[in-house]
Length: 537
Image (tube, rainbow, N blue to C red; front, side, top):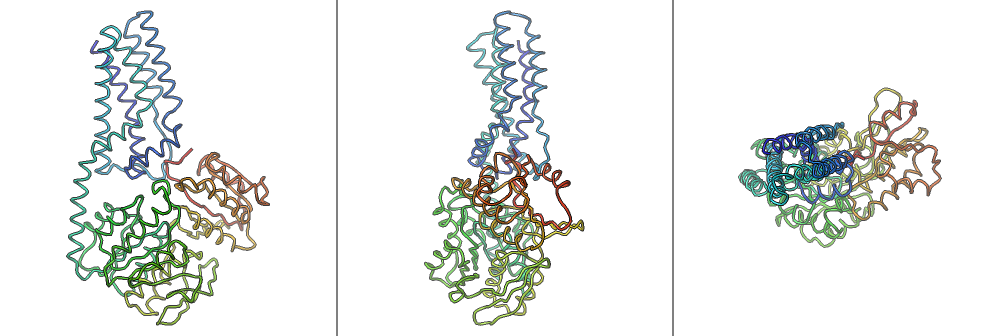
């Protein structure tokens, strides 16, 4: 009976391979975090506990029962089981926004997951033979292996657990290398930036302004974890740079402290505190505590920079007695750096910049939205701490380019303007994006959105409020994902929005097809948030 079980095992491995590859992709998007992956799986059960896998269980059970009662040739069962296995393979053919990348870590995780799958075969066959005996263990194994296919997505969770010690050793090696390298660069000034939102845009803006006086390096893209920053430092940062601008991300208490210990910031910018990643932080208090870890890591002669318009940040600033700078747009008498006379249009924004002890200067930028002006003020505050002049600062502001997928205004030459704010979405940013859209007077205003995610228990209510704002601003609404956007629809229904101008589609691709017949010259389209592959319905 060894040959029959070998054949079943081979076909099972072919089937499970595709499930492992899919779960590896999702795990990579969830930053190789088991808790985040399991939370995702609970919300997206249909994506891996699929109808095909249920059919496979039914066929296997039917074949096993018929074999036990009818005692036909075992190879008939094997052939039928193999055909069913091939027919129910989940190829998961979908257009990935962020494709699976076989990094060293991904390869190690794939290998460890396959090892767990192989061990599972051995255990299943051994126990089946022990319990049911030589005559029936192949048939029994076939059904249990079908059940294992059904839950096969979770093999990757075991894989993460299995290689965790290895990854810790590898990570610490590169972490120490980066930390030692930064420690030995005595002339380097590090600017750390954190916040619930706005940190990536602030990083780009700050680097552009600072480089008007100093040779500046910033972490690429959204590299904001200890390992991402370590990689950037080890591979790209050298003695020629005088300023290092680092974005510090976090999902849990202690994350910012760990990254701050790595980069040793002298200037710390806290952009905002809000409900982003509330699922992993569990409470807004935990978010506040974590973001403040950056300020606590600053040296005695450092600079703490706060967005004083954010109520949570304001409270943190008020309890901070080290050297600090306050920026914002409101309550200007309390601020060190602020902007007024803000005007926005198709060419960008203009405003007057006021800096304590330096005076004021008129500025212009290609960026849209008041929240981008706030991000600019954060960068200006860092420039002030670095003793830059008004002329240098204004020159840097003018050179700031639109940041991809962050309120990026695009004119494709079709008569339709596009505002691309697809990178991420949070309550404050979504409201700011709609405010920008509302400034296009005389144009039909359209939004394409799947709503906001990772807001924990307040997600439904915040999306409903988002729907209220959309209803007060937009003429045509395209919602991506019927289940995901129910809260937005409820919010729309509470406004005067004409519901016949609501279109619901299943995917971003489907929304693009819908717009071909809906758009006309003069329209302005806002793309607000683009969910990762883990959130597809």
